[in-house]
Structures are given as C-alpha cells and as structure tokens.
Image 1 (cartoon, rainbow, N blue to C red):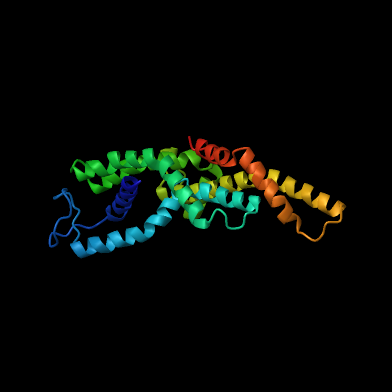
Image 2: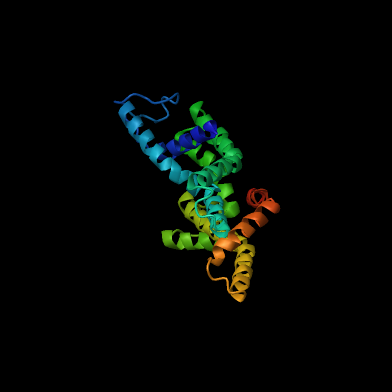
Length: 245
C-alpha cells in the first residue's frame, strides 16, 4: 500500500510539473538534465507539500473509494446501528479496497509514464500523456456517456473523435458523477430488505398495542441477525469489488 501511495504522489507531481518553464539559472531536478525540468529545491518542497494536501482528494476522486464509501454509509444507516462501525473503520475499509482495485492501474501509470521519464527516455509532457492513458481507460470504463456529455457542455469543449481523446478535466468530474449515481443506486437496493423488516415490526407492535418502545429499537436486533446470518459483509464487499472487474 505504501508503494501504491508513493506512485500516486509521483503521478500528481507529474501533472503539476509537466508545464514547468525551463530556467538555466536554477539547478536541474532529477536525472532528466537537459530535458527542461528545472525547479529549485524550495520550489520542489512547496509543490510536494501542496500535492500532499491534494492527495486525499485525488484518491477519493479517481478511485473506487467514492462508491464504496457511499455504499457502506447507506449500509450502516439501513442497519440502524448509529455509529457502529465507526467512520474511521468505514473510511479505512473503503481506502484499502480502493487501493486493491487501483493497484494494477497505478502500476501501469508508473511503468508507462513515470519510469521512462525517470530514465530520461521521455520528456515530462510525453510521460504525462503516456502515463495518463491507463487512468483514462479506467475512468472511461465507469463513466456514463450522459455525464461525459454534460461535462463537455460545461467545459465548452468540442466532442472528441474517439473516447481516448477526452481530457482528464472532463473525465474526472464525469467519473465522480457516475460513481455517485452508482453508489446511491446500490444503497437504495440495500435499504429495501431492512425497510421491510422495519415495516413488519412496526405493524406488529402497533397491532398488539406495544407503544412503549420505538419500533426501531425492536427491529434493530432482527436486522443485525439477518445481516450476520446471510454473511452480509462478504456479500456486500464481494459484490462491490466484482462491479469494478
């Protein structure tokens, strides 16, 4: 996971540094001397610190983290367990599952984009173009055409000749919109069986005149018991991961 995190950081660095102007008065950064990447050490530190602050948002935006986190939140609400599991547990689970899905994509980005630049085989602009292709392929696979069209209209960009010609500035928001819709759809489906249990328990308690206890308190153990008996965590997580392959 540490290696994957570092590769993501290097990818963000490539995005920010691809248009850096050359200045012979400052020392050359990295092994690509003569290729145009010339940033002083203080500027490198500032850029890396900025990228570290943007890294969590990038991970949530261009990975399955968004869909998984939404589904887990809906699942906890449907179970009615309030804060169990806690937010830290759900976020940690979603983060590790996102790394598991994105690991092949990140390695492709590293080998096709960053590694040739590091070896001096490509310029930063060429490395960015090569390295962004695996990420574009992943985003295109899960982005709806309607969302891509909406983002193209907002950006006032001409329609591309092929899907591979789409820019990341269009693909990333389209992917986020598509993932949010998919997450809400899965969450609504997860709510249905637990909603039926709530309705049955509420009907029974009202019919026998038991109004001292809220129906939610009575139905919560039944929902948890049902979820445990059907091995709910394995079903939910397994189905979520299979939806990305």
